[in-house]
Image (tube, rainbow, N blue to C red; front, side, top):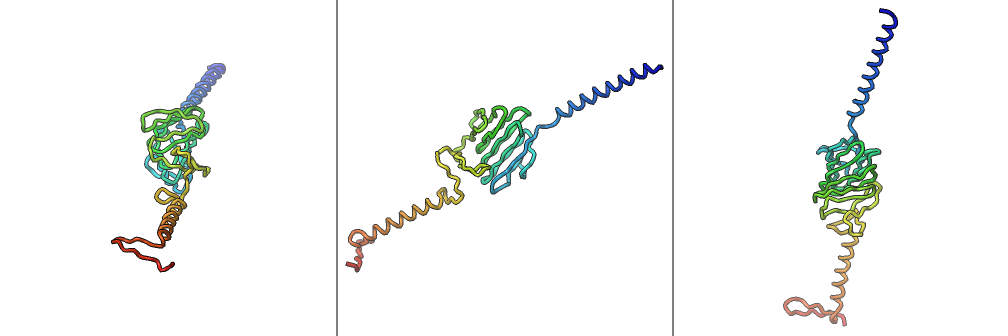
Amino acid sequence: MNSKTLIRKALSLCLVVTVYAAYSMVAFASSEKVAGELLISGKDSSVRVNGEAAQNGRTIFSASSISTPENSTAIIDLGKIGKLQLAPNTTINVAFTDKAISGDLMTGRVTVLGSAEAVSIKTTEGKTVKLNAGESVSAGLPDDKDYRDSNGNCVDADKDGKLECDDAKVGGLVWWGWTAILGGAVAAVVIAATTDNNRIALGGGTTVVSPSR
């Protein structure tokens, strides 16, 4: 076997190894899963992913179910693919590829913070909406409540034209609402007691007359 034959065989072997390595790298790259990051903000950090408690910064894969509690919002950051913000009391089954995002919204509200393509969201009413950056959709439930986003801004989720994100609410009214009601009741009692010539009529036909003249 002369030297030329050895050189040709060596070159052929190198070519085979190079081609194999190139195909292996392509196959490995294509098999990598697209993943996102979960960013949590709010008083309660107990966001759940696929039924398990998740911490801030958790990796999110496609076909994941994500649920937020009452006092927290969450952002699904998919990098250049896009970002979704979940309002409190939201549950969504999210799916994505390296080009697009979609999801089934079960409860609550989702807002698209950014996306290379329109995001397809299916609601509980059975309709699918296309959302661009800055647009949002709710699950169609009547009890959507206003909430604060990750920047602390109040979002009018119930679309009633009022920003109702006060934390100090009692029975659906803020503290000053109850103060106004109680103040009005006290004023009514005082007015009633000082009218009709200082007389207060009691049951049974008895009349009590004030000693003041």
